Image (cartoon, rainbow, N blue to C red; front, side, top):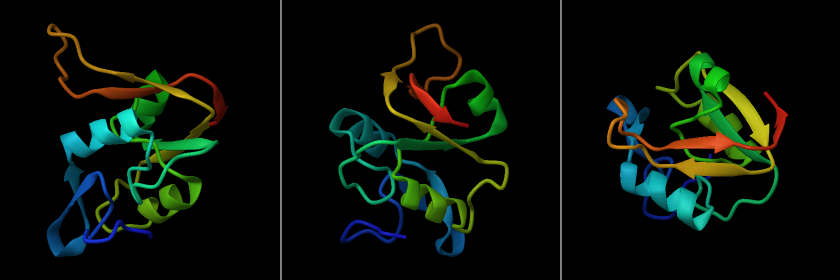
Length: 118
């Protein structure tokens, strides 16, 4: 997996127990959205863009994990600590949606708008 210089793991994730995947880092997730960079390698995104998420996230078309390159998504899915239920969705574009005050879940979501596969 390509990791940015100076980091021990994927750009938008904390390093978890025993070097595995930890939780998402909110500031890095937002940077991925605003700068259109990959959540693993922090390099600029092209097309297609890939999202990984639970079956529930796929079903509602709203992901908490940031956009990824296909190669980075494949590597992330093999990382210790990755959710074994994660599925991969490819899209040509996405919207970054910040939560409203009344939302129970206060995390932003990425909503693909031009699905290619999923």
